[in-house]
Image (cartoon, rainbow, N blue to C red):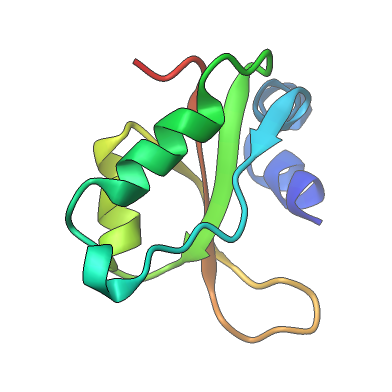
Length: 102
């Protein structure tokens, strides 16, 4: 679904460049007691370290959140916004960044 939407938005070449060989970050959560202390950043860096994929992609709520701020500060850019997964109603942003992370 995401690939199809990205093809419609950016064209097949750009969609393949982002998603053709991508590492998907999914369901990353930091307990509220540890948020804002670098734990999420460290988790993402560790998960992405040494990955052979061209890019890392993720989905996050499409509104200003601490997670969205973190991803932007790590160089993730919006590929799609206002994306609604099938069967859902909440809007998400699909974000990506080239690998490796600095």
